[in-house]
Amino acid sequence: MKFYTEEGDYDVVGNNTPVFFIRDPLKFPDFIHTQKRNPATNLKDPDMFWDFLSLTPESIHQVTILFSDRGTPKTYRHMNGYSGHTFMWYNADGDVFWVKIHFKTDQGIQNLTRQEAVKLAGEDPDHATRDLYRSIEAGQPPSWTVYAQIMTPEQVENYRYDSFDITKVWPHADAPLQPFGRMVLDRNPENYFADVEQAAFSPGNFVPGIGPSPDKMLQGRLFSYHDTHRHRLGPNYHLLSVNAPRGTTETNYQRDGAMRFDANGQGGPNYWPNTFGGPAPDPNAALPAIELSGAADRYAYELTDDDFVQPGNLYRNVMTDQDRENLVGNIVGHLRNAKQNIQLRQCALFYKADIDYGTRVAQGLELDRKNVEKTASLSQEERVKKTMP
Image (cartoon, rainbow, N blue to C red; front, side, top):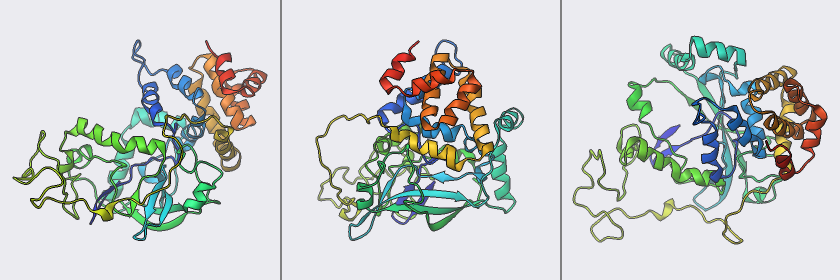
C-alpha cells in the first residue's frame, strides 16, 4: 500500500501472513532459487523446495501457515494483511516504540481448500482479480480495520522471543491489537498498466515518525527494492505519476538518467553542501538514535527449539480438527513428490513442533513413525547427516 502524505510517500510492503520463511537476508536469494524451475527439466522441483525448507528449521512457522487453508485465500477481499516486520514509531520528543501492523478484513476470512483451488486454477485463474474489480464497481468497496501491536524498548529488551525475528509473531496476550484506522478500497484503476504495473513499493519509503527496526530481513529489504525498481522501470521510476509524491514536492540531487521527463533540476546544483539555494537536509526527519553494543561482524542465527514453539501452538491451540486435516493433506500432497530422505528430514521438523502433527504427516507419506521420532530427537547437524542422500 502506498500512502500519499503531506510529508511524502509512505509504503507498507507486507504479506498476507504475519511471518516469513527466513530471518537472514543472505538466505533470501537461495530461497528464491528453490522456488524456480529445475535448470535441467524446466519443471517445478519438490526436491529443491523441501530440501531447502528441511534444512531451514525457522521456516516451519510459515510453512504451517502457507499449507493451511490460510495459504489459499478465496479472494483479495477475504484475507488479512500484515507488516510482518517490526517497525519504529517515534514522536517529536524522540520517544521510540516498536510496532507491528495488522490489516484485518471486515468481510471476514474465507479460504479455499486445495481441491477448490485446483478447480479454480483451471476454470477461472483470474477470479480474485475479477471479484475485487466487480465489488468496487458495484459500490461495495472492501475494507480492513487497521491495528497496531505496540511494545516499548524496555519490553522488547526483555521479551521472551527476539522481537525483530520475522519468523515469529507477538502473541496478542503480550501485545494486544489496538485499532487506529480503517482502509477502504473504493476506486478501481483507470488504466491497469499505468496505475498498477508501473507502481513501485519499498519498505524503505518512510515519513517522519516512522522508521525501520534492527530486523535483519528488513534491513536487507530497505535497499533491494529500489535496486529492483531501477532495473524494472528505469532510474527515474520515482517520477512516474503513480510513484511521485502528491502531498508535497520531492527535493533531492538525483539528475539525468533514462526517461527523465521533468525539468531535471534545471540549472541548479546537484550536490550538497552548496551556496546556490539548493535544498538542505531536514534534521527533523532524522531517526532517533538506538543503543548498540558488541562487535560488528557477520553473525549467523543460532539454531534454537524456540522455532518450534509457535507453530506447535498454532497447530494445537488455534486450528480446528478440520484445519489440521486440511493442513496435513496439503503437505502430504506436495511433500510426497520429494525424495524420501528429504521427507524424513522435514517430517522430523513437524514432529518437533507437535508430535501429532509430525505423526500424521509421516502416516500420510507412509514413513516409519519411530524413525521420524528418532530423527527429530537429533541435533540439526546430526539430522542433516542422517538424511543425506
